[in-house]
Amino acid sequence: MARFEASIYGGWFGERFAREERLQGPQHYVRQFLHPEQAEQDAEAMADAEFERISRQFGIEVVELEVRSS
Image (cartoon, rainbow, N blue to C red; front, side):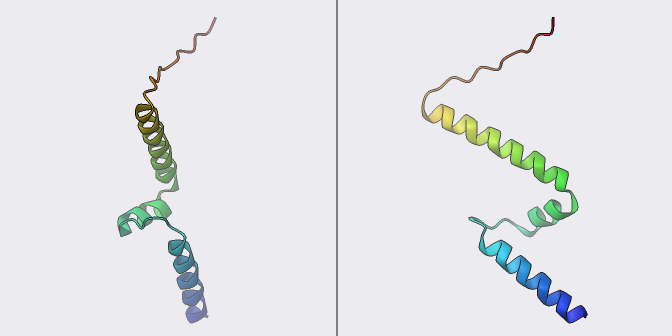
């Protein structure tokens, strides 16, 4: 049974890594599996950085909006 499980894990990870556009270092994947909440924070930070990069590329000024409660 252990060999079967090892084969399944190996196949799953092989397929997962094959779909990555760019492979990361091992620590990235360890953190992603052990601390999934960190992966969400990383994804949000990457999205923010990409948004900023695109806005600068097209000369768009991004202004933070304040939410006022009445």
